[in-house]
Image (cartoon, rainbow, N blue to C red; front, side, top):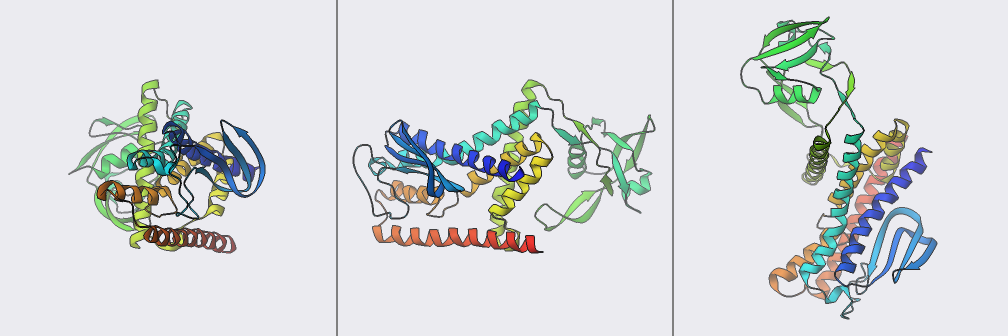
Length: 350
């Protein structure tokens, strides 16, 4: 069942990505020949709105084939009025950006649904206290609940961590212990730790870990939009940073995952309930949006790069250059997919 959910989630997100391209193309007066979810042998096809709609056997992607555009052969062009090639660079960039934009929009709405469902968040309840740490010296204990820091009300573990991270000097921490309120004074210590990318960093900490207690985050209707926006921005920033660190080598290539990882993680999330599936679907959607903006000719970002060149220099890149870059783009893309698949198989074997 988990694999079925995974494929449905992935196919759904791909559908909305391609729908963005489709709607933008139609808006710009471009004839869309084929709208396909998946690759390979066509399992199901029908014709509607003057477009052929297909579902193919390999559900690992999709495409919208517009008149005059062929990623496998960039020399195949048409300059009819309803052709992609007849449009201005700005119009073409609009069509290309629409796919990733729809991924970010879908992620926002998924986070909005999550917010309306009162998602569980980590409570500021202490699990363990590191010996000789600021918290240990100040007398903090397991099962203490941190209720305030410098008179600022604390409701989640993340709020507490952010307050400590941004602090300067000593902190007046209000705790609840056995139903009674107490205050403790301590000074955070700059400590060596690991960030989400596995890098060693220096961070202000007080030497406590979470007890793993959660509570539902009850938001007002207005706050749900702020929550959805913040989560979408956070996920986008995290993935952009992760890609950057992969390119610079700060994150090892072995951390790259492929479609097997996506299917497995979505399947695992489905066992935790609908909210976990929505969380992961939103993250995948942002991931698709970010990755498609990379300046690789086989992706939307590569086509945007060519159109920006035409917009700036008032001429298209030469046919020879486009062919070479397109071939190089496919090599890079298949190389990344192969590396992700290799890493997935290695993890499964390991």
